Image (cartoon, rainbow, N blue to C red):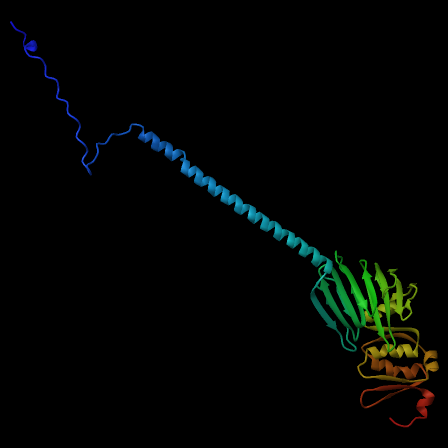
Length: 317
């Protein structure tokens, strides 16, 4: 019997060349089993393009930071130079002016909490600088009580400079046709006084000094009560010559006081006592009762003081 499997040989499969792909036809999809792992890696780690892009951004940021730092450094240096120049030049940034009329006194608190009391007919200007406090007494008299501070506190009266060393002091400027005289009295602490380009002289509590045409006189100890009595509203005369007493009265009266007494006699006549500087007219009326004088009042408010003998022989009001 014949075996059917061997009756005829197996036909080999027909071999065909693969057909060329048709243009536009979809290619068969072959899924990459590693694709999902590659995607996860791309999410976690940047690719080469992204690395280069980030490196370029960091480089640009560093260049910008260097430029900004250079600009800041230049600005800081310029600011430091400007600050040094301002400190050296000591520019003014504020000015205050104070004044009193005849017979008036006033106390003011300054910008640095120092206080100043102005006597009659006084003009004062205070200028505040970056590293100093400068006051100018243009006329009259003032008492200064200085607040401690890092900046110098100076008062100029005429060509006399008074520098405070933590104190209270009185400055009086007496102006004359030829020149001026400045009297400084220290109530507490110490000051340094200089006239023009001369040497500085230090004064301490209870000392006074006068700066005149010949320069600074020698410091001297003095009873300060008469010098500062005006702060209590008083005039104190202690054997004061008539001419000096009348000069003091004139400061507190708006209308003139004329002294028609020979110089020698006016210097010889002396006046003593404590008087209210708000009542100068009452003091004038008192003069004939204590000295050989006569007082005449004119319609314009002027007062004439004459020696009693001369007054008795004069005609007129």
